Image (cartoon, rainbow, N blue to C red):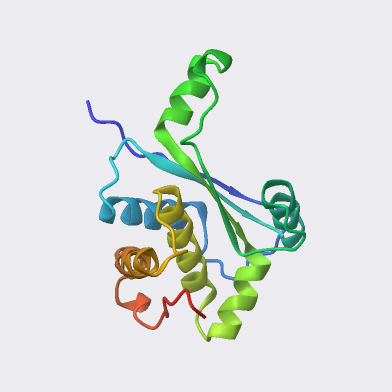
Length: 173
């Protein structure tokens, strides 16, 4: 029997949601579309957290040593701890999840305004970017950047259809 993809979503209750279209169900749907377009097995999924600038700043400081907020962080499960230290239930959950994407809702709102796109489009942009990093994509050197930008456009189209067309994907900016 095929396993169904299960995306775990956490939306911080302390943040105000700018667009009521951003629900757990919507995030799961666009995540499924993104992972399917990237040919990720149906048994694999991600965890998503939508949080505040303050929590994002804390994560950024703890994990990257940068004392400021950021828009998106990705935490891969590629370097999982030895499974002998986790329960069977935790082991199943971790083996299905390729990692976690954390997005700052306030930062996404500011960036959407700056870019002249909707909040939903910016959340999708950030989620796609985070997913690509979980899958090992990077944009540090020119060839990688071009490949990741192309995959990002493809992923956004899978997530949003034609409403993704106005979203600029250019990591040089």
